[in-house]
Length: 114
Length: 113
Image (tube, rainbow over all chains, first blue to last red; front, side):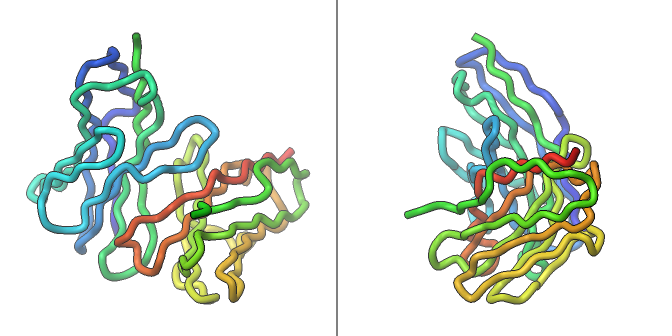
C-alpha cells in the first residue's frame, strides 16, 4: 500500500516570493508521482508528473518538482509566486504496475498575500 | 478537445434516497476513475473502470457502485444516501495505464439533507 504525507496544511507567502510545498511518500513498489492543483469550486488540474529519467521535472505555470528516491520525497517549488497561484495543491502517487489509482496527500493550501 | 464532463454540477438529495452521477471522459480515453473528496477524509479512490470492466475498487460500502458503457461514459450510483455521503465526487479519465496522468472533471457537489 502507498501513503502520501504533505508536511504543511497551509503555506502563506508574499507575492513574488519563492515557495516550496513538501511531499513525502511511502510505497513498497515503484510509483509514479504527481502534483495536482485545485482552484475553488473546480476539479483537479495536473501540474506535473514524474515517471522516470531526470529527477527534476518542470510543469505548467512555472512550477517544478524534484524527485528524491533516497528521501522518498517529491517537493514542489516555484521561484516567484503570483496571486493567481492561490489554490490547494495535492501530491499523489500511483503504482507503476498494479492498481490504476491515485493515492493523494491531504493537500496544502497556498495563500499568496500582496 | 473537450475535457472530462460531469453532470450534474450540483445535487441536493434527502437521506435514504439514491443518486446517479454521470461522467463523460475525454474522447479516446478508456479508463474512468471516481474519487470522493470531503474536508475530513480528503480525496479517496472509489473505483476504476476500463473497457466496461471494474478493475479496481476502493474501500467503500456496497452502496457505492458504478458502471461503464461501451462508449466509455461512466455512471456511479449511491443508494440509501447518508449525511456522510455529502461530498464532491470527481471523475478522472486516462488513456489506459496511469502514466499519462489523469484528467479530472469539475466534479459533482452532492449534498445530503
